[in-house]
Image (cartoon, rainbow, N blue to C red):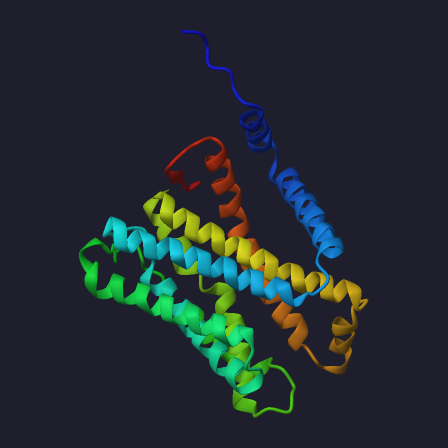
Length: 271
């Protein structure tokens, strides 16, 4: 048998892997910029970004539902991450119902119901396959800072202050809700396909949401950021929350795409 010839995709990922972290970050920034420019000139209604983000998130949850119902295992899933997601979506649903009451409310309700069902399956039906020892990120490290930050930085609107604080809390909590899942995957060292698909969907959803903010700031010539000088920091805080979650998931998405292109079924987390 002759030596197996490597594909151009494998050669490309091999070249990227050999580069320094500075080069990798630069390449990622260039790809993100190209995607933003494409979105800018192809999508007119920016509301589609949020709808697409929530739709991709829903697709990720559907992958989880398929895994739980067909494979009869929740191995590799973080219950704590699902609990944080449910809490953030619930707060967003309450605010959406009181403030807007549009398509986002319907999507949030659907996401909350699906996430609640995933939690039920992990906690009760498939409890024997849940690896609690690896899901060890304390929730108060995440919830308490988000609660304090939401009291200090929240939107200034005509609505009740409690609703505005709750809105901010949901935004901040959503940006870090994936941390327990990433911690579990780091502890496990290896991730099975369905869990990897779910986390990748979260990464794509967050990038779409972040793209909305970046394009909005660009088209308004930084109008939102100019309000910072008047003590209005909410837009900056919300934007940074999106950026933080996008960067949290960016590294995982890189390894996911790399393993997918190489035909690997099991994703190995870098040490």
